[in-house]
Amino acid sequence: MSKLSEMSKLSVKDARDESSIGKTTLIQGWVRTRRDSKAGFSFIEINDGSSQGNIQIVAPAELENYESEVKALTAGCSISAEGEIVESGGRGQKTEMQASQVVVHGWADPETYPLQKKRHSFEKLREWAHLRPRTNTFGAVARVRNGICNSIHQFYQERGFLYVHTPVITASDCEGAGEMFQVTTMNLDEIAKNAIENLNYKFDFFDRPSYLTVSGQLSAETYACALGKVYTFGPTFRAENSNTSRHLAEFWMIEPEMAFYDLSDNMDLAEAFIKRIVADSLSQCGEDMEFFNDRIDESHTLLEVLNSLVENEFVRLPYTEAIEILEKSDQKFEFPVQWGVDLQSEHERFLTETHFKNPVILFDYPKRIKPFYMYCNDDDKTVRAMDVLVPNVGEIIGGSQREHRLDVLESRMKDQGLDVGDYWWYTDLRRFGTVPHAGFGLGLERAVQFVTSMGNIRDVIAFPRTPGNAEF
Ligand code: ATP
Ligand code: MN
Image 1: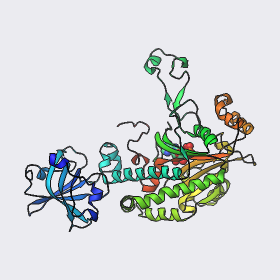
Image 2: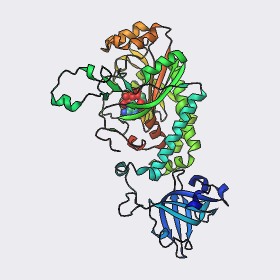
Image 3: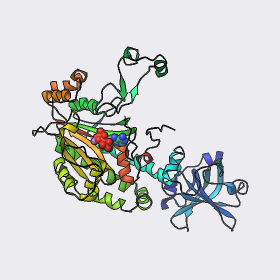
Image 4: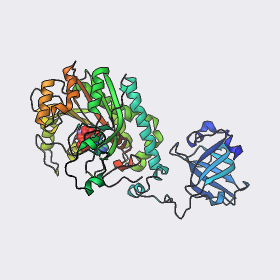
């Protein structure tokens, strides 16, 4: 091993490139398959996570551990291989390694290693969430997710936004009660045992009920109203009991917030933002994106849909006109539509997938179904809310222009049964130097779902948290 560890290493990705031909190097990874040739040598395919493709190691019978070890390699074993990268005659690969030494680091008993050659369903792979990143699909998801996160930071940094960190633990409820995870240091077993009915929060850590955040927006507004343009990018928690393919109890959200922005500026930013994420995924994760198009998207139109998104303008449509379209359509909906209802996923998807076949930004929603902080339009019926809808996913972004008029904001809070005093710091922003401002939230996992065409949100995050599931 001493000889090996002194060698320069190449990732499988780099070793697959023609420019590596002629280099003597070290490659390390996990065995996908081994095939023995009648001519007395073996082909070992290995992958190290750096790319979709594997590299083939040609291991000659002369290796000292050929009979004892090389011929016993199976899927999942970890090895280091030293040798020269040469041109390959094999199909689908430009290079291969002619090995002069193979060291086995770890065996993987084929009787018990779950990832055998046969294809497993995504449901089954969720039970092996600790091993699924070793599969083609989950490796590709991890790489594309990483690329998207990189694009997100670049997009905002290039535009002069400051990355701010908002609290994970909060005592304010931004979106409405019932969906929050409570955080406490009180002993629930003791409380239950002693049948305590009225909790005294003086004994809790923060002297008051506190929760995991459902959104960093209210805190982000404080920074936007001082520093202009900011964004947050952090984990968000919602205890909604919805077992859908688009909801997680723990997900990551990017929330830009901008002073001196109105709703139309907000829509421009959201559209540019999604286009950037998609364009970067196409140009920087080409091999993985082809994999998603060919192997995951059932209609094999993913690349076409994404390319067209980058080139075309999003549809922008007031809620009221969307309702008219839905009412006039022949489509049978499970939930009936009429002005004033919250749109269900089936309605959103009809608009973006069937009617417009394009991303759609809906705006000016009924005030009654939206939170207190959204700017009230002059019609006194609608607020300057916007949702961005994309094919296959539905809502990917939700946002609004914020109410910056103190009197209107306070009256909206009272209408919604909130205690204005609890939000004294939030209303202060309107009391001292108030400005029109706006922002939105993009769910990272929904963006990854959209870009990869993965059907279930549980398969685009490493360890999904959903009702009843917190294993790993
Ligand atoms: P939905 O109607 O789909 O439940 P929402 O209207 O509650 O979403 P917002 O409060 O507007 O969502 O949050 C902003 C964005 O965060 C959404 O557009 C979506 O991309 C994402 N998001 C919201 N809830 C979840 C969740 N439970 N799991 C994953 N992403 C979510
Ligand atoms: Mn929303």
